[in-house]
Length: 189
Image 1 (cartoon, one colour):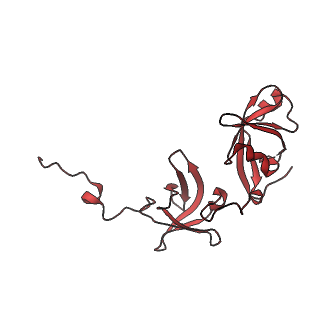
Image 2 (tube, helix red, strand yellow; image 1 turned 180 degrees about the vertical axis):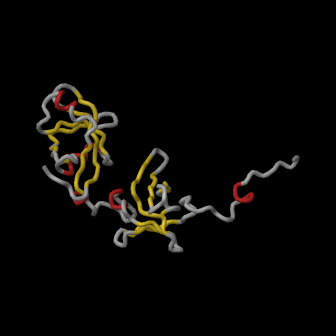
Image 3 (cartoon, helix red, strand yellow; image 1 turned 30 degrees about the vertical axis):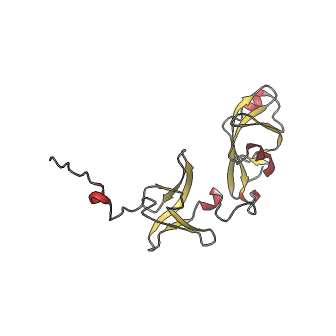
């Protein structure tokens, strides 16, 4: 039983596949077959999972883990989240403008004027682009786009993110056309 210092979600086990203990796994890696490149996977309850075989299916990986030898054992794993420790992720492969989501969580978000908008508490992708969730003391969570227009600078060492509050939707633009978004009356009225 191993407790991870800084767990990073890598995959979620789905339904059993066949009778030999294989499971369908939704991997959060660029290449689903790369899931086996990070070593053993861990569940938050302390179990360790060693990948014996992995192959690609339509949009999942089919995995056989050591000790999971039949369909009943495979079905018992349905919905289990699998993690690795953050230290197992290779930093040298990242480009200058690439980041692991796990490294962004907890960073404080400020604008150029020094206004504080909270800290990053989550990163989501609902299909239209990545979103950062910000939560500040006494504030409701807010989602901002994780785009070059909204996020101007990321300082991992300093623990902060610089944003454009207008592009991020945190402030209204005082110079909106047509009176700040109000409906213009028709000329006939």
